[in-house]
Image (cartoon, rainbow, N blue to C red):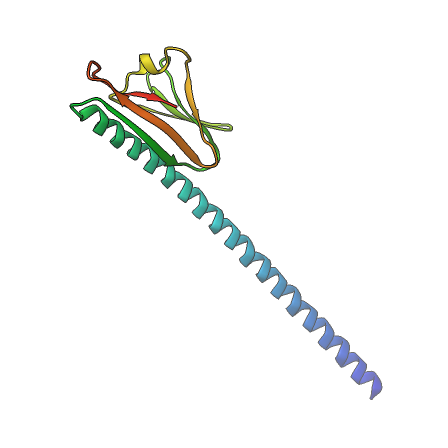
Length: 150
């Protein structure tokens, strides 16, 4: 009888270990899926912040451009920290871009005086400091477009 008990115990131990291994594999699979989903949500949030920034910047430029009087407005925008700077250039057909570490996202901004913005330095970049970009939108009475400065 002792031999029979030992065999049953070994069989139960082997069955238990397969159950434990299967449980561990399931837990690892759930963790991998969870981390993948979290990463996708963070990427989606970053893209939404970028698009909101571009829309808000276009709106602020349009309001400044459309005003009849001299205007100077300090604006601050929130961007993902992976964006190094917001740049304006007169060398490309698209005069505005977001500079990331290994990537550049080019866009077109209307109603800005790109010649005046990039007169001293081309590209004219405004650094992203701790997820915030601060700039000044100006329009003089003699000008028909908006100038952006740091």
